Length: 236
Image (cartoon, rainbow, N blue to C red; front, top):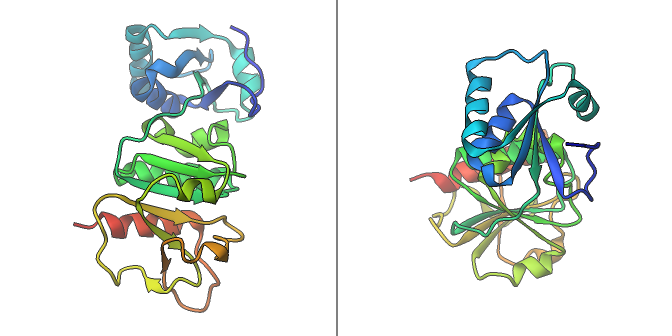
């Protein structure tokens, strides 16, 4: 199998590392094409479980150091998964919405946080970082393979796509997180770009929410904000 350096126009992507690749073959085996294993790989229990699943699911295992070295600049990357890009239908009644996210590490961290609190449906509004970039996959530690992802070309397109109650997290929000009763279903938590937040023209598109902090900082890191909101909305 011939593989090439990743670019967003490819219809395939890569999971770099044994753990993300294990999550791929365990949670999305229908999209897995092959698993590459380096000659320096140590056959831990984790790697042996990965190989066992590949054999059961008839996912090809390829021993090819050169291809792995081409795909990963990290010296300790000895396992690479190859998978078809995919978009799944939403299955939950709550959504996380990211408006123009621009940092791959942040996106991966948010994916992992979502899975940790039982959120499965992620909306990304373009322009945005590529959710299938291998750096995002790795930052998510394979959590991406437990999510359903949809992309929209604009906020307007998204806002008219459903009638969920929408909570927009904004520095100028008028409702403080933690001060109101949170719904358990049919809602969307919407977060803006790392640098610019959500455009103020969408202020009245739903409930504007402020995560209150002291004035020694100007704003919170995006993954921290998402994590705090998810935690609050997940409380019983």
